[in-house]
Length: 234
Image 1 (cartoon, rainbow, N blue to C red):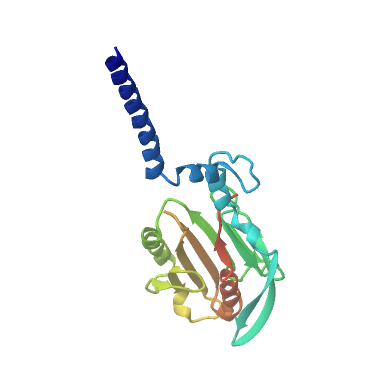
Image 2 (tube, one colour):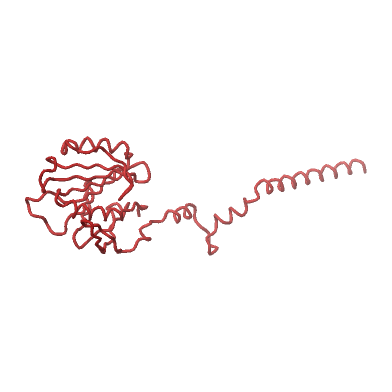
């Protein structure tokens, strides 16, 4: 009888030790498990953070980091001019740009129309178009879109220059063309960029002005584009 009781006791003790080693082994294999759960489950003030809230904080809209106005240097015919520009948002709140609101205004695109920056004062009817449009194409990569856009522009500007890759004022592909061979001061000019939206799509930025205004409107559009920033949509 004593021998049987001793065997049962030893069996029970072995089972308990086996359970203890199993729990301890899990702790050794996952030393950060408890601390990670604590960090992910609690905010800095000790309150519980809902699932996904931490990721949402990391991807907060960047527009909050931009001032409402800033001074930008514009190069006009070799002379530096300091211009106070104001913050403007794209219609879908996926980019911001600073605009010289003394001379230009931003018109939010309706429906499929792109946003447009145009002169604040209307130009005479006989003047070529002066504008800068910004279109978001979320489902086409720049290297694909630039080929389509180049073919489209060549129908209007047969002497369109070869596509270039540029780093300023934005990083991407540049297209440039002048109508009628650039013989007259009022010959229309197109100056465009196709850039990445930071994901799988693109932005197409198209400037239009006339040859004589290259050192005026062209230079001012360039300066405004140095303050073009893609941001997290609201």
